[in-house]
Every structure is written in C-alpha cells, then in structure tokens.
Image (cartoon, rainbow, N blue to C red; front, side, top):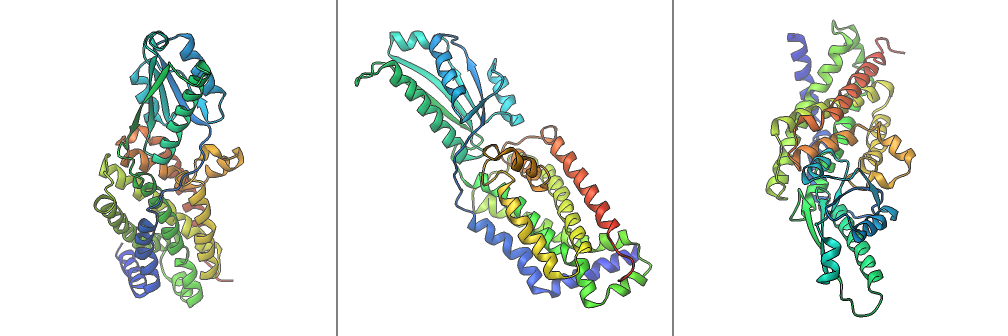
Length: 368
C-alpha cells in the first residue's frame, strides 16, 4: 500500500507539471458550461403520451384519435388517475399527458367552451414547449373541423402545466448533458495518455521491472484523475447553482455516488485506449474526437433519441454517457431516488467491469 501511495503521488506530480493537462481538465469544463448557454431545439417525434379521459364522449375520443394518428406522439397505456400520470412521468415512459374533465362534450355544446389539461415534462424545456404546441395545434384543428365557418362559437381552451421546470429555464436541460460530456471527454482523454506516455518517454521499462502488478499500475494511473474529476464536479455544480440558477432537487450523496461510478467508467475506457495505442496523439484523437460526437449526438441531451432511426438508437445503448445522462436528470431535476435509476446504475457497473477487464488484459508486460 505504501508503494501504491508513492506511485499515486508521482502521478499527481505528472499532472501538476503539465499545464496543458490542467487546462484541459479545468478550462474545458468551465468553457463548456458557459458556451452551452443556448439550448438547441429540434423537431420532436414519437413522444410518449398518456390520456386521462374522464369524459368518455365522442369529442374526447375524436381528439385522442387525431393525436394517435399524428407522427408526433406514441400513445402509451391510458391513465386512470393523476397518480398513474405521475408514475409514468417518473418512469420516463411519457413526456406529456392529455386530460379531459367530466362532461367535456356537454360543456362544449352547451356553453361553447371546453377545457382540456396538458401536462408536459419540462425537464427538457424545448421539447416540452414543442409538445404542447403540437397538442394545441391538433386541438385547434379539431375545433376548426367542428366549426368550419369564420365565426367559431365553440372554444376548447387548453390548460398547460410544465412539470419539473415551470420557469422554462433552459439550463436545466443542458447542464446534465454537459456534465456527461465533460466527464466522458476529459476523464477519458487524460487517462488515455497515461500509459502511452510512459511508452514514449521510455519509462515503461521501469514500471515493468518494478514489483507492481499491472492492476496496481492501472489503479495508480487512474486515482489522480478521479480525484481531480470530483473537484471538477464540485466546480460545475457550484456554477450551475449560483450562475445558472439550477436547483438540485435530489440527493447530493446519490448524485456524487453515481458521478464517481461514471467517472470510473470513463477512466476505465481511457486506460483501455492507452493500452492499445502507441502514441499520445493517437490516444488523444480516439478519446476526444472519436467520443465527442457520439456523446453529443447519441445521449439525448441535444437531439431526442426518439427521432433517430433504430440503428442509431441501438448504437446509443453502448455509450456510457447515455445512462449517466438519464441518471443525473432524474436525480438533479426530478429529485428521484435510487429506485428509479438502478437499471442504468447496473449497466454502468457492468460496463466498468468489462472495460477494466479489457484494459488489464491488454496491458503488455513485455515491450515489443
């Protein structure tokens, strides 16, 4: 253990002496947090929706049929109560709900007005706004069909609620995605050059003749970046809370535990890249350029995964940041506990074990 601590201290010295590493480690996260202040909007399709129909009349059924036949929504099981709706939102199976009050059709014909309620998951404010606009347009189109004349005696007035983000703060969407992007790129990129640097500097021989086992070498290489990444997490959360007015609704302990797991996953991937490459340039190119686009495009924080062809949705399942993004959104924005993110946690644990095993297997104890 004393030898391991000495080796870890040596790795810290390596990091602190390299100004470029420090710039990437601390400069990139701060820059990305500030630059990603503009949330991106895109067309939304196949959004999960549920219906709570308390009216059960011809008008509510006709509106539901128009929603089903549109390409924007994917109808889920009908809700029987607001409790069902809340459960579906927490599970992530729906992003919006359409609620008809009792006597909807009767009120529409007798008073000329009918109210419906639209509830949207505003953890992603752009998607929530788009979804409510789609539903409002569908209802407006149905209203025009009821009254083809210029003067419209009947009015259907949607009542809209935005769950988890009533203020429509765009930061609530991009902050979890940027955190996943930062750890996926920075932690992986820096660790990817850890072993290959020793090869280029000619110090790998010293490691190979030392009494250290390969697993201890990999652990010593990863520990400094784990510690510095946690400091990064604290900085990002402080900036999110005090600069961007992002409220952390869930457990900080759970948030840190899941973040540590994801960082270890990224470090394991970086060690694997470092063991299978022979130059720092190649390792950095694979870890930064090779992972940046998949992380940005296939995690769901910039573009909805539901929009993509099935092949890209399948590819996204092998990207660790997708699962961390789901976890951090559930904990930070919705205040959910471990019972709602245990599946994603198990997937990350499995990925971490597989990546560490591959990194250890590819650690060459003899120089070619």
